[in-house]
Every structure is written in C-alpha cells, then in structure tokens.
Image 1 (cartoon, rainbow, N blue to C red):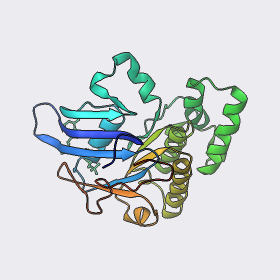
Image 2: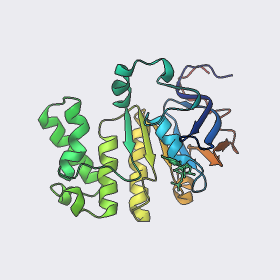
Image 3: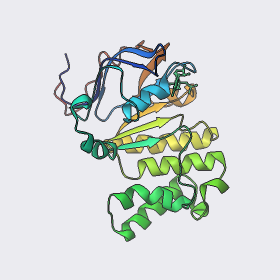
Length: 241
Ligand SMILES: Nc1ncnc2c1ncn2[C@@H]1O[C@H](COP(=O)(O)OP(=O)(O)OP(=O)(O)O)[C@@H](O)[C@H]1O
C-alpha cells in the first residue's frame, strides 16, 4: 500500500452538499500523487466544478476530511489558508480576469504578489503571452478580448508562478483544436517541472493525446475508477512507495 509520501491531495470519505440540498458529492476517497497529471471527466452536473472548488479551497466539505500539501484542512489555521492558496494556480471556468488591468498585468499579477523584480516579471510575462499566442494583445483589457483570448490570459496567469498544484476547469472550452493542443503542451511542460495538474474537461480527444495521465471519472457525485489509477497510482521514479 502507498503511504503518505508523495501524496499532495488526499480525500477521505468526503461529501459536499449546498445548503440543505442533497449531497452532490459523496464518499470521495482518493489520493493525488505529487507530480501527477489528472483529467477529471463526467457528465454535466456530475460535480466536477464542485470537486475542483474543494481542491482550490473555495469550498469546505460538509463531511469527511481533505488534506492538501500534507496538511489536514480542518486543522489548518485560518491565517495559513492564503499561504496554501498561493501554491495553487487556478483556471476558472469563467476566467475571473481583472477587467481594468491589461492582459499583461493580469498575467504578471502572481509574480508581482510574490515580489519578483520587475525586469524578471517583464521577461517571464512576455514569454508566457507569446506561448499562448497573445503577444500582440498584451496591452488589451479583458472586456475587449474574445472568449478564447480571455481563456488564454487566464491560463497564462495560472501557470506563470509555477504553482505546486494547477487546477483548471474546462481550460480548452473556448479555443480551437490546435490551440487546445498547444495549451496542453504548456500544462505538460509545467507538469514535467513538478506541478501536479488537475484538468476538468469534456474533451476526449485531449485526454487521448496525453499519455501518462490518470483519468478520474465522476458520475452522480461519486468517483468511478475504471483504470484503477487512483486506487493503484503508478509509482514514479525516485519515490518510495
Ligand atoms: N452554489 C451552488 N448552490 C447549489 N447547488 C449547486 C451550486 N453549485 C453547483 N450546484 C449543483 O451541484 C451539482 C454539480 O454541479 P457542478 O457545477 O459541480 O457540476 P459539473 O460536473 O461541473 O457540471 P458542468 O460539466 O455542467 O460544468 C449540480 O446539480 C448543480 O446544480
């Protein structure tokens, strides 16, 4: 059996209900391995976005226990939560860009918050904008960008700080197949640098083109694990299982 070494996320008997409604997530028991690449799939309404919200600390479970970066969240001091959140890059389904900042300044934001030197910020931000094909839109504000362009700004902002955990909700939902492939390369490159990546998507093609990823399938609020990848995660090099 796998111990806790190399585990970045653990869910134990987790359930979630909104208000007094029925549980929309139930009996979630799984571990994510540090450095892993995970796709979360399932029909509309299965609870994918809700599961991601638990992961990026926007929602607390109504039952069970979640541990993140080795820390049980129910024991973490409130003051420590912002520190944990800074280790997570998030691509929201609705982007959540800051409308009065340029694309450049939206992407640069995590580096500014982390206190990097302005020269370094400029180089890294320009490089990232180039990768997502938005060099010529650096000065544009989000309301003047197309949906696909906004999505790419959101992705660039989420990955630029090399987070320990990247959580992306339908990150290729608004771009064409070629751009989706390019963005997947970006997630793959980040993953190879050590970031654990969790992507919710309906895009079966994207999943098929990504070898080495583990599929997490949600149905009616519960996980089905057809490949056994969650119950028996692959042992990665350098890791004592
Ligand atoms: N804030 C909320 N309050 C009440 N119910 C909610 C809330 N957010 C989601 N739900 C309900 O929880 C269930 C799961 O929703 P969720 O958005 O997590 O599904 P999803 O798998 O991400 O769907 P989609 O693929 O359509 O985005 C749905 O029945 C939804 O109506």
